[in-house]
Length: 142
Image (cartoon, rainbow, N blue to C red; front, side, top):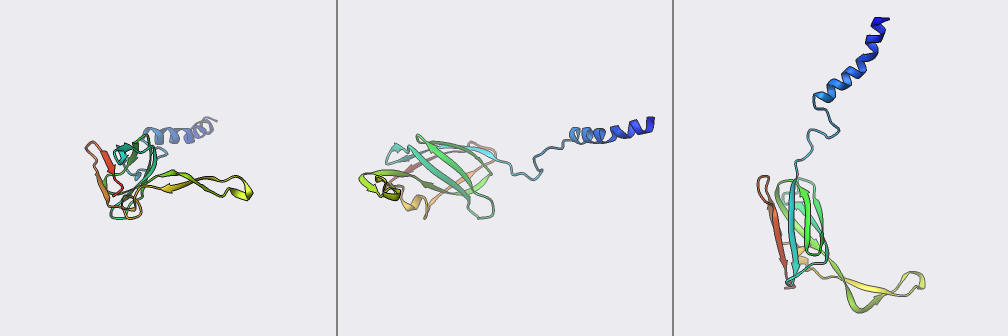
């Protein structure tokens, strides 16, 4: 009976040994990320709301996203050179688009950030593992 009792403790002892050895639910090869913060202005004014994508410039790693609120953003990402894409829409004064199934029209919107900052981006930044990663994007219509 003593052997049977001892054998029943074996799974619990193995589990405890694994936990004390540092086993966790996060894989050992999970990428190390770093805090990235910054500001986004358009024509000198903080962008109220926008979406950002930070793509690995070499195209080998995954992309990271951030949301701009009142001209500021904060996110986590891996180190390396990144292409930055920023998109934002706003209502077009006096224009509407048809509503669904005969409902009243809805305000029309437009992408007002120029293509050189999104679909044809010229923006690049270097995210470092050992420094402050604070970037300021001062966008213009030209």
